[in-house]
Every structure is written in structure tokens, then in C-alpha cells.
Length: 196
Picture: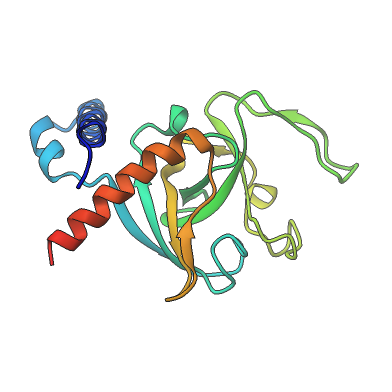
């Protein structure tokens, strides 16, 4: 059974999500903005399938199935060290999974002496692949290849990874939000079991 405080936090998260989504839709010119429809039918989490070795060992050498927390306005919801899902900066129809390494105001210094240091501008972030065995600019498709990314490209934060039937678990992100998302994950699993 879910505690009342957990349920209250979940309802507050759903309301915040639906208000933010409605406001974002209104700003984009959508005329029919329905907060209550978003509240009752909107999804806070979704499943994302990923493949490739870029995020090994966090996600697994062949990719995996991820439970992702949908983010409407990522700036305050993600922090350095989080594994995020973002729009591919070179093809916005594709989504990629990378670790957030730096946000606006961070100074970026390369090990390569030919690269000049620079500071990330407002609404910019730097994402990297976890796989240290990949060559930075040739194999690892991350900010070392395509440069800084807009924070608005981030669409979700990875909560849980299913690598295979016996290897699965929560993704290590920053601690404070892991507690909150752990509760959301519990409610998600309860709803999933009840729907069967």
C-alpha cells in the first residue's frame, strides 16, 4: 500500500507537470490548452529503447530499455551527473542518451592543447558518453563531437535501466531526486500491476 504522503507527492508532481505542459503549449500558440486533460491523461514517465555502446557500462554494451521521467522544463530538474534523454542536435527526430557533464557557466577545458578553453553560455549544456573505451571525437557521439547543446533539447531523465532479464536496476543520478523518482517508480509499478 502506498503512504498518503507518497500519494500527495505524486499528485503534486502530476499537477506541476500538467500546468507546465499547458503553459508550454500556450506559449507555442496551441489554442486548446486543457490542464485537467494533461493531469489525468498525461504521462510522467515513458519507456525508451536505446542501442549502442556509448553509455556502457551504465546502460549495457548492447543498449537497453529505459524508464524515463518526462521533463517539460529541464533547467531545474536535471543536474550535472544525471543520465538524460535529449534530441540529437544534428537530427532532432532522433533521441540519444548521454550523461550531463556541465551546465551554463561551467568552464570547459580540453586535454588537447589545440582546443581553447571556453565557458558554456546561458541555456547550454555539455553531454558525454559513459564508455571510456571509445575515442572521444571519432567514436563517442557526444558534445566533444557536436559541441554544446541547448538545455531545451533535454526531454527526459533516465530513472531505471533494464539491460536484460537478470541485469536491471535504477540508474545512478543525483541523490535528492532519486528519492522522489523512486517513489514515482513505485507508484508506476503498482499501476502497471493493477492494470493487468
